[in-house]
Length: 336
Image 1 (cartoon, one colour):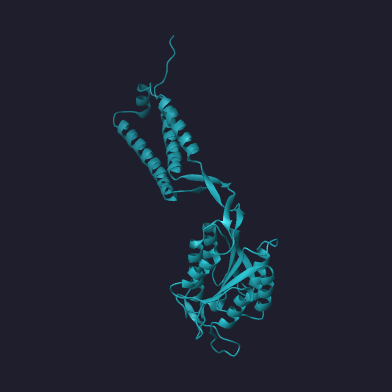
Image 2 (cartoon, one colour):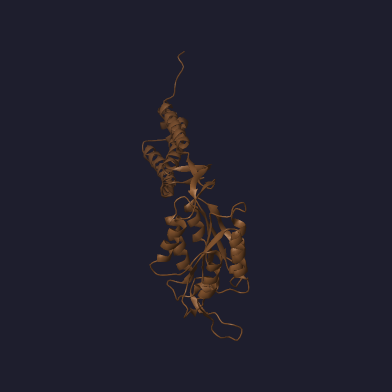
């Protein structure tokens, strides 16, 4: 169960306060009665009152208050799956999350810049399915192809430089995984957008790009970084810089944008290479080119909605209040 307005759940803190107040008021009442005489004698004199019913009425009010607070918090339970049909293409974005993407030659750093570009691209989509692959020393599907752009952006936010425990950069493996993630029955409607600084550690990205071409995949590459490069910061658990990455000879590593590799990958498949810019014009150009491609009918079951269940809690609260209203504190005496 989830709540549409969880902030209202804080009102539940009022319930113990109400209980404490009622106990205090009851004790205060007893003290006042003791001023007039013996408490048991006074209770006998007021024998027409049914104290058990009175306590029951108070309990019913407290429970109904609980259900009223749950109601206004907007309880939602379960999911209703919908089959969404749209016309578009299948687009997978492979995002490099290796340690070199922490370099800050492009602000705020290469990885955050990549995530911003992907988020901007996702906002432009209208009917295309999108999937996300994260890669470093290996690659895995972070988000399968979906029409649910909200879910895609949620998975995007989870990507960081610690996501993949295998060091290095394997662009070839990212392309190979993308090939498997697309439909194997088609030889068109498929686009791969690769965001990386281009550094690769013997994963044969050009061979993988050639296989992608055979499957009808067009690859667009976006270079994240600068040819001049920058050092790679090493950070602690609190995201504080504690040093810089060094090689085996204890020399500080300088990570540079490898445009040549990214250009060749795009050229093999008939795509294009763009260097990342602050204005993200490359995203507009890639989207325009993809928009001119042939479309197909796409289906997705990933779009879901939570069902609102507040009516049930409201009904319980109403029945409890009706019961409290009907109960009488006065004792009924049978006529002799």
